[in-house]
Length: 216
Image 1 (tube, rainbow, N blue to C red):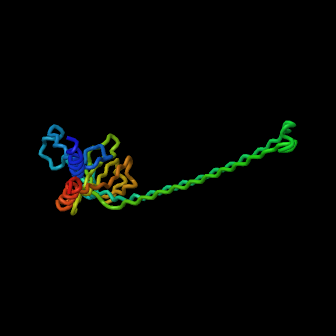
Image 2: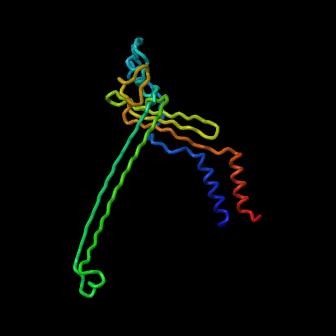
Image 3: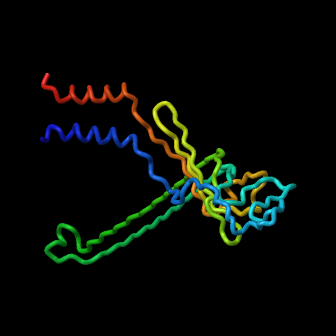
């Protein structure tokens, strides 16, 4: 049974390459528009209806659940930290030795000690993330702020790129139905990949594994 343990571990590792990476976006990344409330519509045959009103001379910015919004991702963060410390300690002592040791070491014995300590540390981090993503309004709060979320998946040769975004948008920050990510509260921005091995690489790995355990 023990001979099959490495094979099982390899298969589990290969299967793990196809899983969806974890996310920091906890809200749903899409929402459908709410169905119209027939009870809120006036049954008078008029063209103007309060439930479906949108200003004629105003840009169609997101304001209802299900509306889409363009988020311009422009995240640039940097942090630096430096620190240093030092210390020193010295001491001395002298005493008169016994008479039996005076002939060899002298009448007075003295000793000194000196120690020094120095430490320095420097850390720096820098991150840049730019791009655009279309998100959906998933909730409208009582004060008019919008909870938005969205996901974009880009499948490339050997894997899939996941771009996810969520946050709270003030409608006053929206211009031409676009808002900058720096103006989004509680923003969650992530970019992750799911690399997948192609069949040729998988066969090569399995071949090397079996060749390593064969006796010849």
